[in-house]
Length: 183
Image (cartoon, rainbow, N blue to C red; front, side):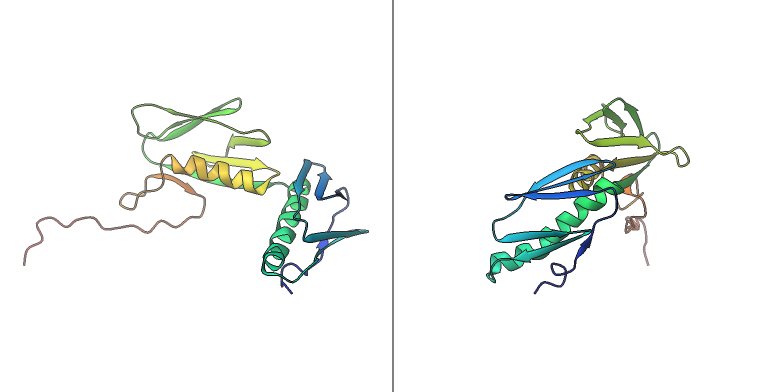
């Protein structure tokens, strides 16, 4: 039995979970999400609990058990609280501007980079910390993918630490070359 898969999911008040055929629909105050389920997984919804059961004991069913439980839990958390990722832009002249559903990044290249934000995701600049981009949404996978896409335009480099990094990310710094060090 999967340690994660057998744990029940507590559904907070204000969140509706419905299972029809091989689809699960989760609706809450922030929006609604839906996902398709493999045929080997069964979802039981009782009162304010959701239980994930597997129909067989094959390798595929065992591997899906914990995965589906985590995905359903993330859907419930997303429609109730939402998810957020923060990115720091570090470097002289590096900055971001948000206009509508587009973010324009100046990252030391000869041209600015325009990134169109997908549906369901909001991007804002943090008012307290300069050069911090806040990415919010209800789908954890999409929030993480958008943050990863933006970070990939200029990942932090190890010598000066310039680039885009997650808030709290530790970048291992290198010392660089020591020219002229003779004994």
